[in-house]
Amino acid sequence: MPQRVLGAWIGLRGRWRGYGLPIFASPLLLSGLLGAIGGEEKIALGSALGFGLTLLAARVLRRGREGDIRRASWLVAVATGLAAHYAADLGSIFPFILALGALYGTRLSYRALPEAPAPEPPPPPEPPSPVAESRARLARVQDEAARLQVPGLRDVASAMGGVLDDLDAHPDRLPQARRFLAVHLDGLERITGRLAAGATPPATLDPLLAELTRAAGELRETLRRHETENLEIQVKVLSDRLREEGFR
Amino acid sequence: MSETRNLPDSPPPAPLHTPLVWAWGSALLTATLWLTGTIAVVQAVIGLFD
Image (tube, rainbow over all chains, first blue to last red; front, side, top):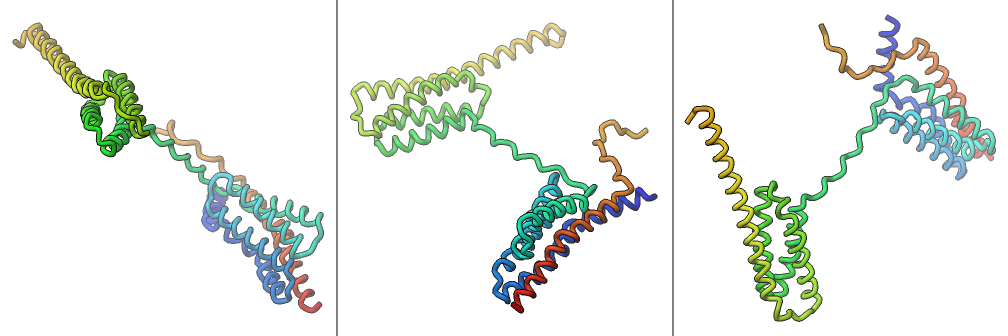
C-alpha cells in the first residue's frame, strides 16, 4: 500500500515537475524590479540572470528526458551563483557554496522521477542508388548537350537514358550494366566538359559518339536477350519437371 | 499462463524514504536559491533608500 501511494505521488510529481522551481526564484522578480527602479544595474542584471536561468531549468525539467534533471540542476546552480554574486552582492566565495547547495537541492528534489530515454538519432540518409546517381550525371550531360548544339551528343545521352530506363524497370540487370555506365558515362562527361570549356570538336568525335550510341543500344538488346534466354531456360526446366512428374 | 519473458525491465521501485529526500532537496533549494533572492530584495530595498 505505501509503495502504491508513493508510486502515485511520483506520477503526480512527474506531471507537475519543474513548475516549483520559479517559485523558489520568485524573490528575484521583486529584487529585479526594485533594482531597476532604484537604478541598481548589478541587482537588476543578477536578478534577471537568476530568474531567467531558473525558468530555463524548469523548461528542461518539463521535457523529462534522460539526463534532464542533471542539466536542470546545473542551470539552477549557475542561476543561484550569478544571482548571489550580482544581485545579493555576496562576494566570490559564498555564491559558489550557494550554487553547490542549489545543485544538490535540485537533484534531491527531483530524485526518482521517471525520465524518458533520449530519442534515437535519425538514421543517416540512404546513399543514392547507382541508377539515380547516373541519371543525375546524365541530366547534367543532357543540359550541356542542349546548350552546345552537338546532335551526336544528344543522341548518346538519349540512348544512355534508355539504358537507365531499362535499369529502373529491372534493377536486377544493374550488375551487368555497371561497367558500361562507369566507362561510357565517365567518357561522355569528360567530352562534354571539354566541349563546354570551348574545345573544337575533332573529326573523330562524331564516329565516336555514333559508336557510343550504338553500344548503348546493343547493351539494351543484350540485356533483353539475357532475359529471354533466362525465360527459355525456365520454361524448359519446368516442362522437363512436369514430364518427369508424369503431368504431361 | 502469461508470457513475461520479453517484457522490458521495469525500473526498481523507489525507496519509501524518497519523500524525505525531496523534502531535504526543497529545504536546500530554499536555503540557497530562495535565500539568495531574499537577500537580493533586501539589497535592492537598501539601494532604493541609499
